Structure formats: C-alpha cells, structure tokens
Image (cartoon, rainbow, N blue to C red; front, side, top):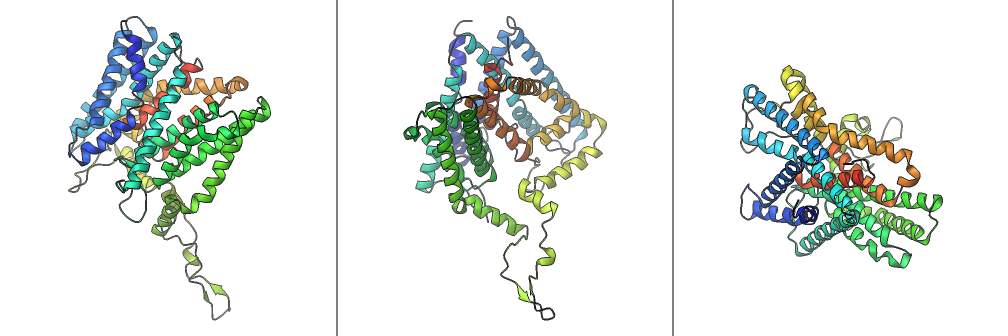
Length: 459
C-alpha cells in the first residue's frame, strides 16, 4: 500500500505528542471552557485512522481481518447495551453513555492497531523497540518539564481541594497523569540501563530522576508507589543478571545506581507530599498513633490512652486507606448488579450503573476501579468478550516468558513488563487507565511491542 510505512511511523510518533495534547486539553477546559477539547478531537481522529487502516488491510492480511471481526463483535455488543438500557434505565443520559463507551473501546482499538503497526515495522526491519523507548523518553521529558516549570512559576494546578497536598502541573486530570508517569517511568529506566556502561555515565539516568522527582509532586500513592516499584525492579533485575549471566561493569553500575536512588528516595520520603497526605488520610479516618493524650489511671497508677479502646484499625479503615472510598461505590454497584434484570447481568448496565436523578451540580459516577467498572457496564458477556483477545496474548506471553526465562529475562522485557504490570495494577485499584484514552494508549503500546517482539503475535 502506498505510503503505508509513513503512516505507521507517524502513528508510532503519536506517542510523543500525548503530553502536549493533555496540556492543550487543560487549556481548552480552563481557558476556553469548551467540552469538545483538543484531546478528544485528536484521539478520536487517531482512533478512526487506525480503524480505517485495519479495514483496508483486512482484505489482504489475515490478522487484520481477525482483529476487524473482533472489533465488529465489540461494536455489536455495545449497540445491544445501548438499546437495552435505553428501555430499562430511567433517567437515561445517552450522551454520557456514548462518551463512556468511546473511552471503553479505545484500549482494544489501540492494542490491535499497534500490534499490526509493530508487525509491519518488524517486517520492514525498522528498529521499533528503540523508537518506542526513545518516544517514551521524549514524552517523559515533556511531562517533567511541565511539572518543574509549573511548580517554579507557581502555575501548577492543585491535585487536592483540601486537607491533602499535591500538584498536577498543567495537566487537568491528576489521576490520569499519575498513571501515565508510572507507566512511562520503567521505560526511562530501560533507556538508562541500556546506555550506562560504567558508574560515571550515570547521566543517562537523569530523565528517570526528573520524572521520578516530578511524580513526588503529585502527592498520590500511585506517584510514590510507582517510583518504589520501578527502582526495586531495576535493582533486582540487574542484580539477578549480574550474578547469573552478565558479570559486567555495566550491570554492576546500573545495580549500584538503582540502589543509591532507592536510598535517596527513602531518606527524602518524610519531606514528600505523600508522607503528609498519608497522615492526613489517617486523621480523616480517626486513626491516631500518637500517645500525647496518655493519662494516669488513678486506680492502677498506669498510663492509659483514652483512645485505646478505639485504636484498633478496622478492615474498613484499611480498605479506605488503600482504595480512597472506592470500596463504598463498589459495594453499591454490587447491590445494583444483584438487583438488575438478567439482560443487564449479561450485557451490562452501561455507564455508572442504574443511576438515579443526580443532585444539582453532580452527575452519575463510576467506581474508578477499571475492571469492576468494565464488568458492571458491559455485563458478563460483554466483559469477557472485551478482555478475551488481550487476555489470550497475556497468558501466552507469561507461558513463553517462564519457559524460556534464560533468554527472556532481559532488562527490556523486565522493565517493559513492569510498565504493563503497573498499568494493569493501577487500573485495578485506582482506575483511570483502561477507561481513559490518555492513559490506555501507553498500556496498549507497551503490550503490543512486547507481544510482537517476543513473537507472541504473528501474522
């Protein structure tokens, strides 16, 4: 096909522009006060371009044909969902339902689209892994620059409205940019590990350090935890490689750098927003570890804390600390699903379940735990169908990785794998990944690249 290579190369380069699009989206919302933002337009057009290319390729490519049939099946299930809930839900907000499903289909379309993209670039002997790592690096540098400049100039948006502290730079959605940064961070570690041959070449870790530093501004568990997970993974993977098959200065240097950065993070933790926010959250839950209120019992003469009787932390408090009230919305949605008719159990309750007329200024809301949101909105049939193709490849990759671990245990596979695991983990606990196009594109790119590189996805 004429200009096919140019199209795929430009499609891959689209990754670089994600943070720019997100900043322009913030400007659209805050300065122009319009709902049809730059982000929505750019991402919908890109998604449409990938679908058109798949349709054109379906005539001559068996895999593209299979992917096209998969997407057609998904479209049919969504149409059934819309028609079904239009007759069941009252009130029913069609615009909200369509907007939500546009977000839902973004990840599967990105995944199959980038799978075909990487297969084409692999066939053309293009250095697609190197390009992907470089493009992720450029994205990370743009994000870091935005956070640092916005913080220095005092123009950063607050990530919390009260009690807790945190900043989201010039990015409108704090949860989404936090997930994006966590997914990108391991790829900056790949860049550093591949280029650092000796300790004095630590400069290759600067993009990683800048992004990790910026993530601390967020004040979120995702921002802090992402850095911890990536540093531990970088240290352990280089340690294992050093003692098993590559006792080189390169592995030793990267192992030491990651260990030093872990120590720096540990020392800096008391000065980070997340440290303050955790205590603020504990205070909101009436959990107090201080002993300032201890008094002397007049009968026994022993010190007694008046709060001792209530000081035991409950399971509910722990869940709230981890999930930030999402567990409450999950319990409500479970009850709605249990009471829903069989048609909704099979094909889903649509956006936000069987919502009631909302209060003024408030609309229906999701659980913000992606897998639960997808299950309740798509139903048993729709959910299983949606995840069938990605899950099939993930299982195949895990089996391949374990069976050939001597060859597959490399910094690239490990750190790209950590990126994917972080994406899925955040989707399961904090949401705003698989149902957020700005984030899901990164997960799709990482997953497709790994699958094609290891031969899991073939033509």
